[in-house]
Image (spheres, rainbow, N blue to C red):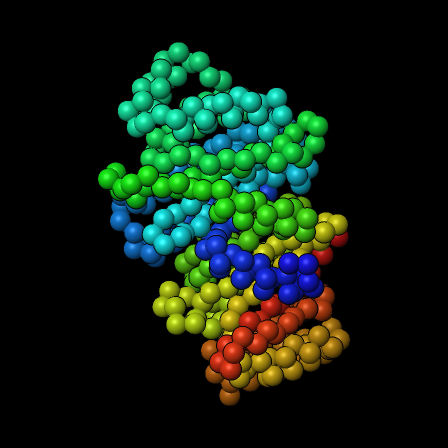
Length: 371
């Protein structure tokens, strides 16, 4: 994935599609962000028409994972991009795989490893007894996450916990935890395996290198857009005026996928990818989605024209498009493009990747300066 910044979005989209990675959040975790992640996932589970039992199991494991990240975040007191937690949810066949990652002190690695190995060695009834024992004796400290949370996660998932540590410095390592909730109490045990975890770790390392803060890969529609925007709003730092400016640009870009993307025969919405990266205090906002190949030439001309207009020419062009009543409202994607150029005060970068005669992949990026 070491191509141009825009081709990177397509390669990332393909990699996430291959591993069915629906949502990755990387950054600081607050209660508001946690709530938004849970709401977004709950909405997607509803869209998949999962049973209440499945939703409850997946939801409860997510809560434990997110609490685990927050606990470690509070313990390490680090404030660098390497200290950012990461949360990933993916669906493979009928199973949901949940992965969390966070920084831990190297001195806690033996404690965490020993606890997980013990948890993985216990049968269901033994795990229940061990939970009660720890609850009553307070044998394990919450420090480093070596407490009831991991035991409870294994109990609720009904499966083994997969984990790995990757060194970051002499003082800290990154702790990845990976599990898959059984969807029925009668299901045979599912091994979360190392391969899917390693794929996620590799993608996470790429995101760290490019300082990507958030990725949503999946189906875009108006309902999940609201929860996604809520997560983004709580993630952004900086002055209120700057946050409003960036947020407005994000709304316009995401609405462009919802309104003008190609559904590829998905009845729930339009497939696509959205990512936010940060560089020297500026946000780089990138979207990628399917469009009809037949519309590429017209859209490319529109983008080139908008990019080459002066501020005054942009304003005039926007007004002309706004009051051109001969254009069907559903076709006024041009207004959004003009608005993006005006609000960002930067030229837009874009690429088209022809997939076949019918479908192409459209990548659009703009920079939102915070200074």
